[in-house]
Image 1 (cartoon, rainbow, N blue to C red):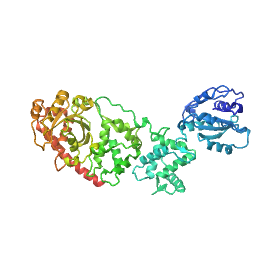
Image 2: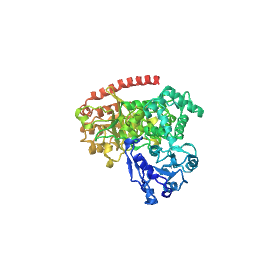
Image 3: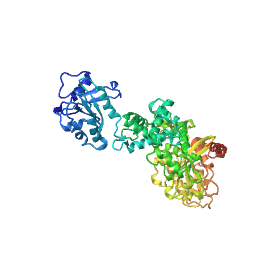
Image 4: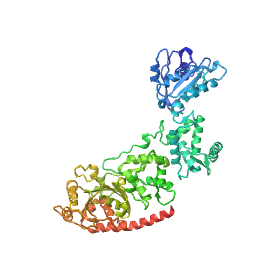
Length: 606
């Protein structure tokens, strides 16, 4: 609280009248610092009041003490001293200026209002939030004065609204547009009554009565032509309402909405909202749970406008409009299943989310935050969407697992066929693979397989063939594929060395893949042939593989890999027993047929 001591504007009297609830007989030059407890303030926040005395303090001390909000008292019975405003805020940048409140004190000494005099000054200095007329002697508007101070800090006008232009600021429009799109559950561009009621309940814990809803829409109708469409609120109407709230001094309404959707005072999504705490013990993985998949399915459905079970480039762009950047690059289309046009299918969409959650759960939490998962599903945070699996060693001890995602690292020399092996898992033969641009290639591929009737995700990761620099991440997986080119005599040597160096004593199942099996097989320049090597180290014989076919490559081999990853103890014990592979293949075929039938049924529904 500051003012000119020579004018005796009554700033210290204001503080003392607030605290003692009576006008003081004797007023010191400066009141002691006071903190008002949170439980006695309307906004339930503590308020620290600092008095300033020009006789005792310098301008530098004034600048250091002002941090949140400032009062500029003036006497209604004397001329207004306005030099305090530039003194306070000319030394700060525009975005960190302190909101100011003009206080017309000693209203008991005059019979007129000062508002006509004040309005030009408020227009000149945009840092002034409001003006209050009061009397320390009569205790008029004293409590209200400090309430406005709290309001100016908790619900500032500056980040939301530009008084000169009489419109919302771009950053506010951007935030409210995201909120509108998240709340538009069917993505039809309007908020219908159900969506408005859900929004109202989410932000203010109470629904709107039918008549109240109509009243809101009527206000919009009277002020703009395209604010209401098909009896629902458009984005323009939504933005207009918030402009109206601010212009009528109800900033707290807009701020309540913004903060409920994760925004801070700078209209940025908070770190706490985007990255909630999630503890992940060692040797545990992260997966999406059932509710998360249901949510992601609803997001897919509301953006799949043509109901073709795939997202066109325009539909993908529309889905990610609530993000500050485009999270998926062109490599995603070569990481998951797509249709003939190269568009991400429903299964591919869920697979990409599964991949992100497995490899980088913090990124997945961030993405779910942008989509509004915790708000739509009324959860405390996005962490509720994540399942942290139990330690892998416990799975091995109990010889069973509840995990749904299994990682297979694919190793091999250059040009051995690793990339082709990954793309074949996505149903692409060699002809389709040749259309992939070099800068759009991916080192990951993920899709579903069926193991004994259970749908599981298999994540393939192509490891760069740098033998001397294989990291722990390159080695940590559930199953290993060692790929060699049957037509290259030097290709198998790399597989043999990698196995002996890193996996010979490991409990991780290993499979040798004889890639490009459609070509002539040549003798490998290694002391043992691939078959002899596998026999010596008790590995299954090399599995022939080719993607040079007219049809989509078979998924049998990938089902076997998933089965080995799920049951490593069985893979080791039954490696020479062909019934292990037979059971996996038959189970996969049966459930693939059933799965395709269900997919067709879903497609008809969509």
